[in-house]
Amino acid sequence: MSRNTKSREIGSNQLGVHEKLHSLVERYKSTQFARPISEHTQRAFDEVLPWLTQGSSELILDACCGVGQSTVTLAKQFPSAKVLGVDKSVHRLEKHHAYEAEACNYQLLRADLNDFWRLLAQHNIVFTKHYILYPNPYPKATQIQKRWYASAIMPYLMQLSPCLELRSNWKLYLEEFAIAAQSYGFDGTVVNIGPHVEPLTPFEKKYIQSNQTCYQLILEKRYD
Ligand SMILES: C[S@@+](CC[C@H](N)C(=O)[O-])C[C@H]1O[C@@H](n2cnc3c(N)ncnc32)[C@H](O)[C@@H]1O
Image 1 (tube, rainbow, N blue to C red):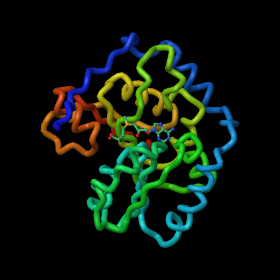
Image 2 (cartoon, rainbow, N blue to C red):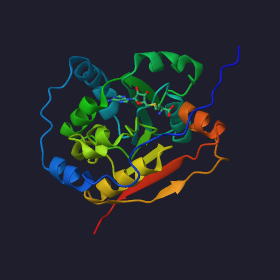
Image 3 (cartoon, rainbow, N blue to C red):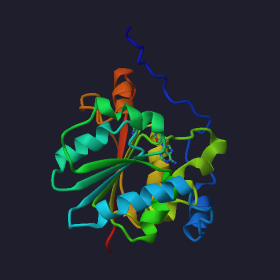
């Protein structure tokens, strides 16, 4: 039976940059994220740490990897790097077998990024590139503090790499991320990735097949 893969355009009652964005970004820039690290994420981190730190390969982080299709693609694209895909959903990670590759330079891990990013930052682990592809956008105006750039995790996630690539079908999410990232010394512009790209993830494929526009934001650290 063929499944209907059409997906609806993202809807939001927020039409422009949130009026609280600036104050939230400034507040969380200098706030400690006090919530204790969850046990399962601590365990996952302890298990993957030797793989991450042994040797001198470049590291790439695929945060919110879902089923890990993008993790495999990145591992093939950067064969001398180690690519780590992280997602909190067992359900999605269990579907990885459909995308599995012989490439041995990647791992998938089940962890909560709100904890995992903090552990990486505490251990000064630096990635050449940090991908966040189609994160949950939380589009209602009242959900602003659920968006990572307007929450206490932002200072930790921004210290993990001098280069981030984000993608979303909600342009405003990326525009707000770019504004927040400026406060951390990063510059980047939101661009339309166009309908003819080879989809990097299942969500991207679904959005493109539904004639939705997908956007990309590449953030680079300013050295001035
Ligand atoms: C919209 S899906 C995108 C998945 C994949 N990147 C793709 O494009 O197909 C968002 C993913 O983010 C993951 N996610 C959301 N919050 C998370 C968190 N705090 N820690 C880890 N993963 C999270 C979800 O489990 C889900 O797989």
